[in-house]
Amino acid sequence: MLFKVTGMTCGHCARAVTRALQALDPQASVEVDLGKGEVLANGTFVAAAAIAAIESEGYKAELLQA
Image (cartoon, rainbow, N blue to C red):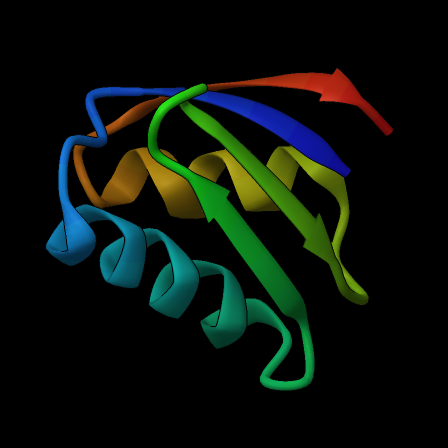
């Protein structure tokens, strides 16, 4: 799944988003592109749960590609 995530600016942000998604699936692969403001995540979770997890860290997220 590819998400647009608004508000990420640094490594701390990337780690927070990664931890939030890996809390849903510890085996999930998460790649954060701070420059584009995108997160590519592959795991056993649904998009709505992933968006909720990202937003619980204080960022705005939307699904770009399932």
